[in-house]
Length: 319
Image (cartoon, rainbow, N blue to C red; front, side, top):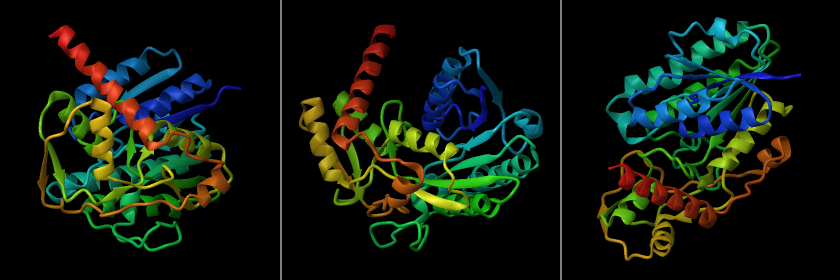
């Protein structure tokens, strides 16, 4: 019996990859995306176009606060809620947009999902930003303390999801840790570093490079999200990380080797709202989802750099 799901943010970096995975596994997918201006919508439109070529995919273009969700949730079994406005730095200047896209949209989706007779489960994409600069490693039972409006809106949305878990709707929140890989968002550091290196431009490094991240390969995140649809866990947050921390100095050393160039680096002050370090405790993901990250950082970043190199070649050929 074919299952039907809704993927919000289906034209995004992670959402589109999840939608393809679901389609490959026989699901019918209703994809929703507002094509916001958080970054170049052309990339989102291209991803949506690739999904639309699949016979079991239906795309809905629109804001979750305005779309007739009851209509599109009819017959849907599972909702994967990946829509939202990402990025720390812009959240200080356009806080109202972050609140709308991350909190108000989530609230509307939860209300509609709770009323929809067919929907049994909602998997919400939260973020390691809810921890802020909490003591390492970050445990789901440990303290949260966002240090940016983005982190605050992600924590607020997560709490809405978990509070909604009950008889009508089971919910789980996955705290993603710095997702990277081919097709990564253009505003993210790993992609900006690699694009600058490949073009021979100066890399702008915020801070001294000692800050570290628990980078998580996109296919690992998709796998954890997929597993969460069938897990028994409900009403709780679960970390989804890559399994180890990497400093930005180590990232740049690896990038130099991958590109075969000596990098030109300009250091800037630490960016406001950026956590100095992140690191996930993964026992809950192991035990409740059966998830273990499969792709190490060196392998994953090599795949991203190769994708960017091919993208540059394609642009040259069409120029």
